[in-house]
Length: 382
Image (cartoon, rainbow, N blue to C red):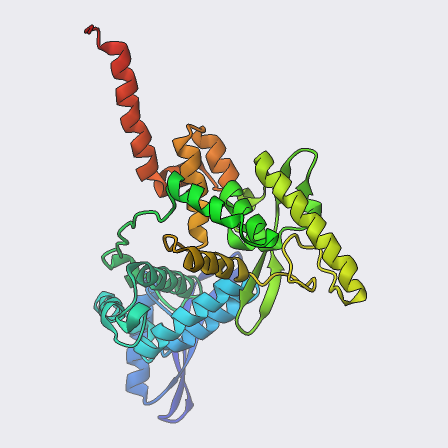
């Protein structure tokens, strides 16, 4: 008998054979609370779901429940900063649709949520809603969460895949022109050697900020004129500053730097060694290239503050520290360096990423090819 009474008119066991695993019979067993008639209806419903492969377990689970379970599964498998970003965005999901049962989430509910993120006051930059990029991050997060729900048997399909894709309009890369670079290099001569070194190395190498603050002297080869990038430092609120691996495997790389930058690093090391001797046992013992005045690791956000200080002091064009990386790449492109070399030096996983990010600068080079070809093809004289 498929429906067995356990407590009269209150509790029933539903037992449905599904098939065999070898000689072992597989059964779906569910406890149903209610009357006999309702239990039989539930049995019929289950038979249809199991036959059509649309059955989901724990159909009372809410989005908040699922998000909590998903975050728990991710806590030890991803970086701290990524986890905190997931957690922050997941809180927005829970706040808006966390009360909805997972089985009831549909395309309309999700589209309404994304529209809400665009217009919600008091959130996002300038308190006028989130940017396209941030909304896309929410979209990606929900896709991952619902895919996990399918894997865990809580959901049959992923309604987020039917949502109109979130478009992120590409913004123009922010960087300095060669003339603005020359001005920055000029004013740097008036600044402390540490400030010169961190900004010049960023301009030359195109390293990310955390890669620079993670750099140790053992990573600098003065004979070969190179630096080895294989780690980074990062700050996350609630966790403090810590060392981590680079962004990806291809971010581990050896970068040959300009003789000017190399000489500046040598000069800076001499000054740092003098400071060590001066402080004696008060020196905190950091092995990093860039440190505080008493020998502690430089805070990951410090290079940004140094640049901002110099920009304000000399009334330079306002850019982010990451824009120095873009500036470095744009200078290499305009100098005719092969894209394969630029991509490897920047630590991109493939050349197409370099092309995609810096397409505008490559377009300028493509236009110049037309002028060069014309010199071969134009036979008119005088």
